[in-house]
Length: 144
Image 1 (spheres, rainbow, N blue to C red):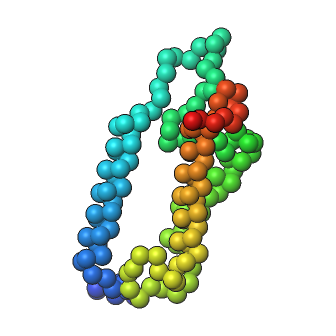
Image 2: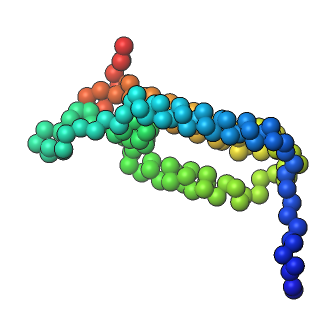
């Protein structure tokens, strides 16, 4: 079969206003992450000393959630890997009918939206617990 170079692609209808909103939200998100990284730098410490380890030894703020997960059991890293793999292949999974129009949180993809928001909330909660509620010997403490 010979192609003419003008294959037909199916597009989702949208408006320039939608893409301006996406661009603005992406820039705002990057600015917030950079501001947090500037005001809460990674807690780099002196070189490791096996004779006197810090207690508690905490990861950088952006990795605290995974440290909190593996503190409950080292095998809990595997569900994190599976979740990452799921998010990696999510664009190619057939979930519902194709969209007719671009929109925020479309009803046709409600399970994906709910999963994404739930994972974001869980990672935020785990990061806050590990950052503020963990003390010596990784025990729960009251930070205030």
